[in-house]
Image 1 (cartoon, rainbow, N blue to C red):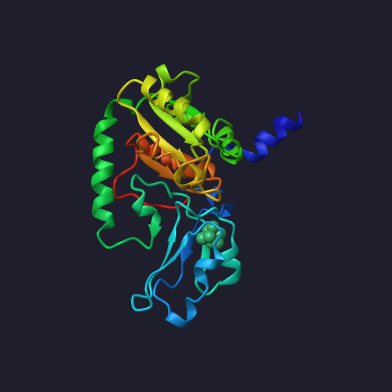
Image 2: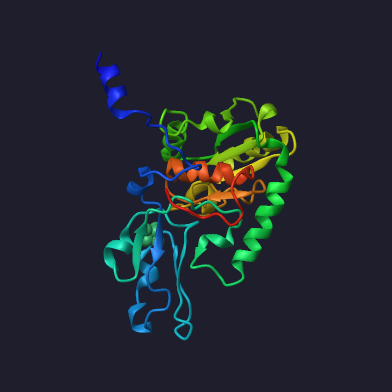
Length: 266
Ligand code: SF4
């Protein structure tokens, strides 16, 4: 009986993303935003040292530009806490991109055209996949955070299957390779073999900051600093971990189901 009453009270809880915007995304630390990309040089002293992963980039004193490499950011909040005049969390969940360079924000002026071109190429390549997409998840040295968010995708809130996307246990049936973890040496062969076993066309998603850049560990004796050196990556989803909405965004981007010029919040 309580379940019936709860159902009547709550109604449909499944998100309408990407068809419509809803309020679920507002509570996530989606990304760090630079509030003042060209501050006075006196305000930039000590900024790179704030970040444990080297995600804060400060150009020369003349250029004064401050950038965040979202591909290295683990969303720890140190910069936001120490310098609220320069940085803030953004509830933006559409953080996935098909270009590693585009994760460095604010973007270079020529970046939009380049990203658009890559996205059009990717959408063309995966045109046949749009109605039924099978995803093989591979843990290549993850700390388990991304896996918790991936598991949420199959629950009633995100309900991945409503988008025609399904997880599969075998790479032979997979269209998308969703890779978590830093790409450790011990998993390098398994990652390559999984990639090679998948039929064409196939798409690789680097899921999370660890898979994108190595995160807090970075390049080390046991990992190369992300998976891009092991398999060709088509889509990067930054975040440590990325929210389920960011994962949905990355998956939709990977199979060409987002408008190329689209950029919205949920
Ligand atoms: S949130 Fe943490 S990891 Fe991200 S840029 Fe700020 S200090 Fe670096």
